[in-house]
Length: 266
Image 1 (cartoon, rainbow, N blue to C red):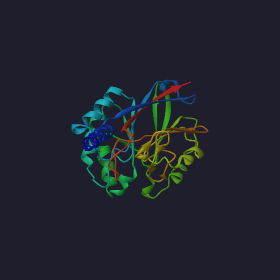
Image 2 (image 1 turned 30 degrees about the vertical axis):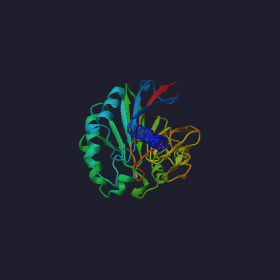
Image 3 (image 1 turned 120 degrees about the vertical axis):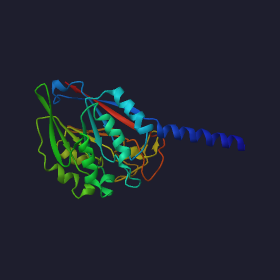
Image 4 (image 1 turned 90 degrees about the vertical axis):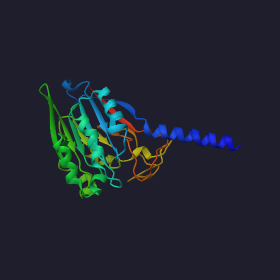
């Protein structure tokens, strides 16, 4: 009996190790009449909640996967570092290698704010060419057509997401929003944003087959917004399960992920 128990423990340990170190790529197709024809088939790669995790020497595993995707643009939606084991260079090792693949846009998560070193983090990213968006918007143009990108600062900085969204009017231009927090989905809906990229929930940390995530910051037990896509009215929100962990060191049935969004103009 003891041998079977030991074998079961070993198997579970191996499965947990694989489930916490293997990176999956989850693909999403977003269709809209508002997406300009020039941006049809554009690929957006979303990175979220790295939390200073390491995937290969100097993030080689992540870099390899991102190169294989060959995205047109890269979004980083916060918590690229972890305030409990702050190692900015570990995150910069990744960004330094992907900045040449595609333009990179970044917004803060709560952990960047919690370090009390957020200005240094932003400056370090800008120095290597990252577009850091702090409650501001930019326009991307291609073949004479354009889309709008809005970046929302994490509310730990002092401004609620709803308050920041009030700075941006609805637009005829297709609008992409980078914002760390998914629990305020209805704020994005009420502001008539088109496509929101979020993270923060870590997929619910432990995912229960058939039920979803167990617990998430800002949402508590059995959270609603943990992974995948959510749609209401004209707003779609994509929530990444993220890559790393923070206070809880392991994931269960919750593989770290990169999300690839392909835009379709219809």
